[in-house]
Length: 486
Image 1 (tube, rainbow, N blue to C red):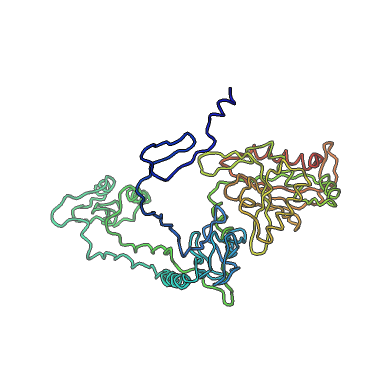
Image 2 (cartoon, helix red, strand yellow):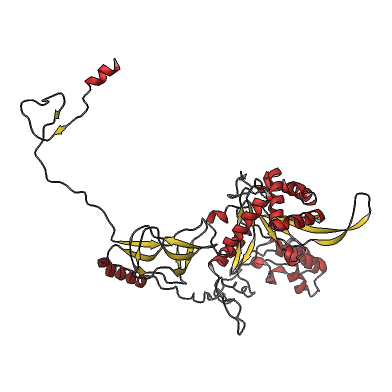
């Protein structure tokens, strides 16, 4: 049945462009479609940019500007799509910038060593040689239209407000007949000393006669009680509209010049990386932090290190693995507060480790450190350090940390406090391991190697009990490190 149906289906369909007025469908094996008067072909214009911009890319989520390290290509060089053109220094690494189009590098807008904001044109790409001259003209116009640097701020010292003299001030007591006002105690003193109050000019607020005025008119020395009364009255009554005291000195202007430079000093501007570090450190001051220290014995860890060191395992890898295992049991220490209104519980344990490099500081990240075995973790760490020192880290390799580890023990530092990086909940500072006299459970004294670990934490997310519990778990792993090799 199926074969009989298939045999009736035509195997080909031909479309005829000729007009057949008699039969619109001349046969079962051909299909004729009436044709219409031909119209001239309409071409859709292709929108092609003859001159394209090579712009400063955003190489990380925190990058706002970049510095041109070097131009790989020179003006006039032919470029192919995907070819590296320029090396840009971001806030953490040096990265090659590729072109997205074929063409000629017609003009370099931002020279080597200069800085440009993200999105700004740093070079111009011409499609053909005929467009090179136009690109150069556009580049020169960009340079000439750049806004000049702002002039140094002028002194913002404002003239002092005019001080009203006593002669120009309105009288505190109106002229002409008026009712004499006395304080209750002044009235009592006036009766006691038989003083005519109508002849006294009051020195109190708004011409009020005070006890001191009565005593002065009576020729007696003021008593301690009257002095106290005067101070009480003065503190309870608003001050007179005009004060004879000089105005307070004006506050220093916000644009006041800084301290004078020391003769012979050299001013070195921040590199892009140093600027990023400075910005992050200042930003961290807005986070309410607290610190907790915890001593722990390292004899067993030192023995394990000597055992695995020939296999390429570093002490940093041991500490990072121990921290990751402890964080897996205490997820709140691996959390963070990014918006000031909520917690962020991170699904991964990513240990960022501080590394000092030439010209700055960077924190390569050991991602999923709790899931990697010790030897793979060590290998990964060595690769990250090499990339960090050659400034070849990708953004996700230094921006994805959930907990930071800083170790200065190799320099003999026994304790220090680390500054909390923005976007994280805690940072651990590890000091050197030194022989220390300790007591065991039975009360006997002995000498053990011991190191002090200090943790700085965001108090909005992590509380003292949380951090103490985490450090207790971390100490157990350090003092019994067999689980690190599992």
